[in-house]
Image 1 (cartoon, each protein chain N blue to C red):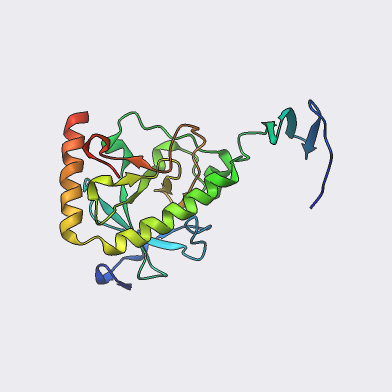
Image 2 (cartoon, one colour):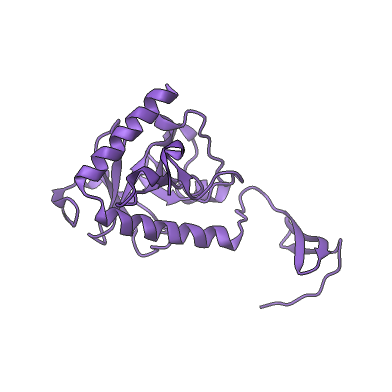
Length: 145
Length: 85
């Protein structure tokens, strides 16, 4: 299907690439369908809303940058996307990139987006990890905010 | 809203397996112990609200990020990744 986006213009997305979030994104409950722009291995990809062309969030794969990243997810969150085998989980963190200070970029470790690769259902969960911050600076030594 | 009065060390049960216990009262602060099965997520409301704000901020900021800025951040990330490998 053809999808209209602000950032990428009109793009063609095959139905089996659509990610469905039954609860929407936190703060955007009405946005339930997304797809990912960018290839695997690309450090920044985009979580593009299908329902709202203006909404595209930059995302990263935490395991590429933080080898020790290990998110603790509640059973009810896992049930919501029918995730039974951790192998099927694809995890992304949402980035905030300040235009005036890109080196002050942060990622939200507290609320990863978890995609079940088997059925493409996803949820932005609140990690049970007490020490994971909402605003984790990616480049702390290089003059954050 | 159901309103109950409790003293220190007294509890409230929600259903069969969620217990909320008042541990300590000091001035205007109350320490609460929550025992719930792992299938029930328990969070401070501020955390949820902070995530809402962060998502909105991420979307707003992203709308202003041009390709040039994205490329510069990708370069920084590559550097970061090399350091960690």
